Length: 94
Image 1 (cartoon, rainbow, N blue to C red):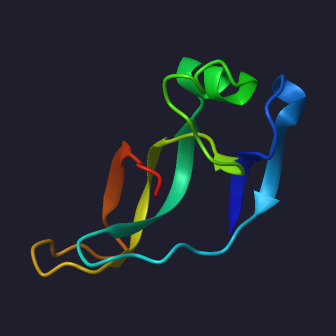
Image 2 (tube, helix red, strand yellow; image 1 turned 135 degrees about the vertical axis):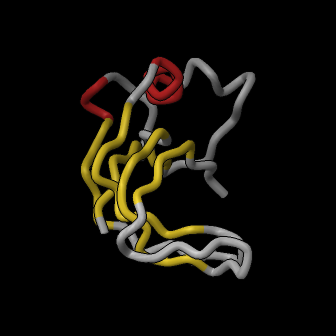
Image 3 (cartoon, one colour; image 1 turned 180 degrees about the vertical axis):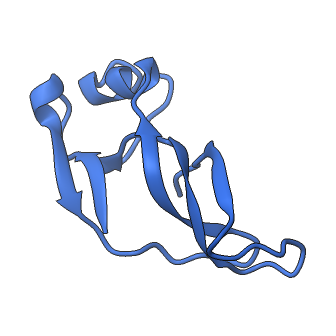
C-alpha cells in the first residue's frame, strides 16, 4: 500500500510517497481503503520538527491522519461493517 511519509525533518521536500506494509489490526480496529486524506497544520509542524519537544515522533512518520474511505476489514463483533460501508475519522499511529 502507499503512504505519505517523512524519513527526516525538513521542508516540503522531506515528504515522500512510499510503499509500506499493510498494518496489523488488533481486534476492535478497522482497515479502511483511504480515498481521501488531509494534511493539516500539525502535519507541517511535525514535518519541520517543530513539535518534537511537545510531541516526539519516530521516523519514518506517516502524515495525513484525517481520512475517508471504504471499510475493507473489520475485526470486531460489535460492529457489523463490510466492504460497502463508508468510514471517516482520525487515525492514531502506534
